[in-house]
Amino acid sequence: MKKQIAIGGYRAFIIKTKMTDVPTSVGPSQYVCAPDSKHVFLATPAQLLLEKYLQHTSQKLFPLSIRNYAHPVLSVDCYLNLGPEVTVCFVSSRPHAINLTTTGLLFSGLLLCFADSFVTPAFLKKFAFLKGATLCVISADRSSLRHTVGRLELEEEWRFRLSDEFQTANSKEDRPLFFLTGKHI
Image (cartoon, rainbow, N blue to C red):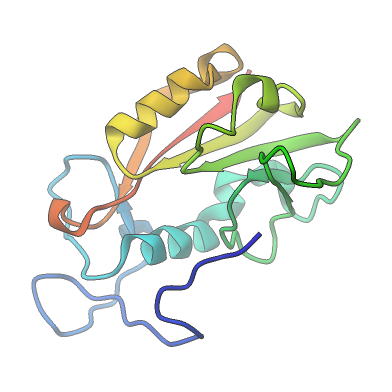
């Protein structure tokens, strides 16, 4: 798998609010907010905010996979840095892809980022999840997020709450990313 880096290489990116050009101390909890909230918006690319948020909160988001090599988080068609504590297994949904055998492996979470038509309900049924495993679905907008949940028939095995829907702390003009978390039943 490849990760696209728009600017290339490592560079320190100062996260600042849109209100002022002066950097403020913004913590990981401020990188995301509830959709349509009156949150302080940040002048930072949405992908970076999401990745920083996941790096800092992955231990709370995916508690069953912390240093647990027997029960990793299953990440389909995407690479997002979940930090050093969370064990991740990456697979490709492409028909021509060669994936490691995951037979008999129980996953502690599922990460779906911009799931395309290759990710199907039949593809996801190949994998087994622990009870209480965490699901995180990421999309470019709320409509796509809900469409993905419906198309993949995720409601059958995962429980969602309205309070588990978030967006990156970007204004509408900056095109925030939306994500929904849930638990395996």
